Length: 237
Length: 285
Image 1: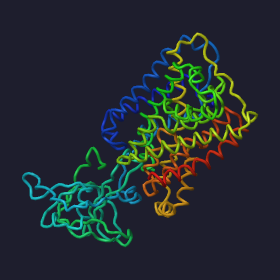
Image 2 (image 1 turned 45 degrees about the vertical axis):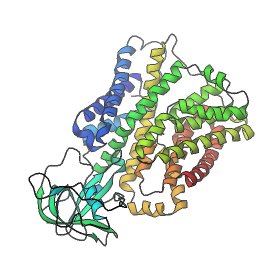
Image 3 (image 1 turned 30 degrees about the vertical axis):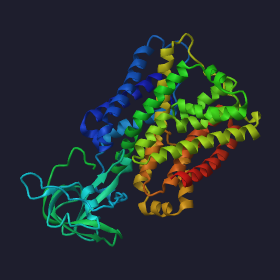
Image 4 (image 1 turned 30 degrees about the horizontal axis):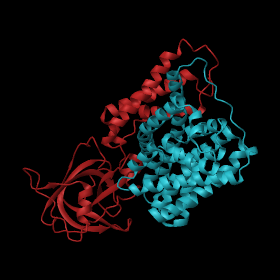
């Protein structure tokens, strides 16, 4: 085997890359890596790579013996790496391990007092909020909008040194490489929920708490009940 | 390890559409626009030709891997080297594909796109002028013409160019994605935060990262965006240095223009790029 991929090998590498891109973008798996709105670009890119490979493979045959072949750059072999990782490892969305290492999502506090968090979900006594929304509301100077209300939050469990656990979501701007962590402390969270378990928490607002291991105030929720749930298709907020 | 794989695949997937678009456009231009066209539209005087060539970089979308051979062919066709180098440095940094990628990577921060454009163009023009003042043609080993298959149609040439660039740039993209994923997973956050806290250190560290990571300019904005604890100015340094000087680019330059050229051109470009980016960052960000 040559150290540098010949033309046919290059086309096969591109073929694999195109197919894998289309497979990932064609299912919900792409949501583990990039934002939902990015799907059309992935589909187009995968189709173009596939087309270049197919045209190259089909068109090359009659002329393959004419002239001398220029082997491709050795670095081209690396195109097989993402293909192999997707097929063999099938990496899941980032979870509790990363949440512990990622910086917290920067939250800006609005200048004017917000009007209110909105009505309860139909037929229930609580209001579903994203962790980002809850974090923003908790950081307001005036948290009266949350007083005497029950909120429902969905996320996965990640470890908390100061007791209980964090209800966690990762927030992504472009792709998983720029993820930041949204963590809401559940100080009396039961140990029966293991890290990476997806749960919904219904509870009331309590003042943000400072975890000594973190050093700054984090939003917290006083959990009434916690229930296991299925992980959503789009795990990032 | 799982986290590494996820970030690795994410960077590859996120960058792939931009890479494909850039490679397709650059293959189209290098196939369908004759190089003599560039020689015809440039002003005769080198001092004027440098900024014109720099701005002309806007219309050649492609990452730095594509612009080095194009600059080589420009020199061969009689374009003054100073102008060709301004083009070489400007094209990968300020073309629309890269600017759109930058805007996508920094949502709500349009000033980042403007700062990147201004700083990179300034570096390209300054380096062009520096070359026309002090550059020696003896440092250059002019590139040999690229062999094209006899009787190849333009469509075939287009396909060949796309395939070559995709394999080449794609391979380097994988290197960049793997390095970025390794950094994201392994480097302790406190260490990065400590570096990020010091204005001088953060600029130097990100300039060094840009050189070592050698990420394609179509994808580097996403890596810069992920370095959330660093100041915008130091991330601008990363974006300005990356397309101008990095390990793979120096290798390409040495291969195209000769080693004597590369060992002089690259360090000077690095210093100019860091100074200009810090200056622009202080004013615009």
